[in-house]
Image (cartoon, rainbow, N blue to C red):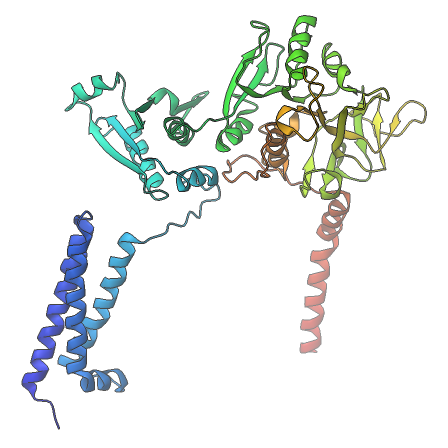
Length: 522
């Protein structure tokens, strides 16, 4: 039984109608995303029409698919319509279900995993109102960032408000500068203005809104963030310059970061989850030492990063805990960043966190004292190899050599974890982690500076040390990277391979290739 030409014409018309229906449904879905059901109904009808046309003209479509040169006509029209229809359906599905791939080396268009986790666990509705003026690049940036937030939660609603057209609403929220985003939830309000978003480092200006936006969401939903205070007043390293990447890493891990000048106020902030003191250069006077000591004895936490030959007051601060900073530079003849023996390279078997590699440019040793109290628990954080020593008289322009009787033989602890029951509560058990006094002391500060923060696993060591202090359980691995200069870190064996291969490998390959060519042509 043969199909009549009239039937062929009908199937082609049905295929075209189905294709048009799919196209109309796709356009409606793209332009009016608030009514997806209507667009999907139209596309389903279009799909059914295409299926019907395919069934009606199945034989001709089959010949068009199997013929050597193809058959042009109604059957080809049906086949092409079905193909285009499948493409339209796939595009329609991708409108509501899509995934972005950030292939940039620094993941600059991706939210940190910590923010994504906060959003995925968000159970309370949050409304974000961005007050700006059309055309403001900062306003566009904040609005686009909030759209990225919405990709990770259904609890965040957002709206762009033209401040020029609705000034009364802006005044109602107490907004006087633009762009400002108001976060609301459960009668809690938090405003994030342009001063919190614009980052100025010298003459460079950048936008960074993820930290304040995530903090605002946590604040209005009642989640408490832990606060860290960088102690200042003794020439410590500046978090806005040399330690800005370390600060960014802490912010990425949802800490609040502040500074505290102890020379102006001897009262440690009551909300401090931990104090961080980085490379003090001037004397810490007795009253300041006593203030920090009382804070620690009351169950406080301190991360102290000190360089060789620390100023007066550092060892006085540590003496109650049975440790001291030795004079000298740590030299490791077996594991160092080639060609500098004064930059110890610590591998995974010589650090408590099991990090593959960390290094310390010019470190000193942390020495436990014999008279340390039994209540104080110590654990080496990072330590050198058995071929190391503490060089008492280090000269950068001379090859270091171990002097028996003068230098201290290794292995050396370059960092120590310390925990003790607070003096104010001697009855507390060591298992009650929330009441423990905790210290992390590392004999180098450069490892976490901007020059070295993202080299090997230095950033992870710094962040994990803070994490241990604040009694978090998850080991942090920072996800967002900056684009700093990364040093090629090689040990002595790797350096020898590079040297020898660069001298002999290329000539050897050329020699072998020449020999093969000569043999084949002889």
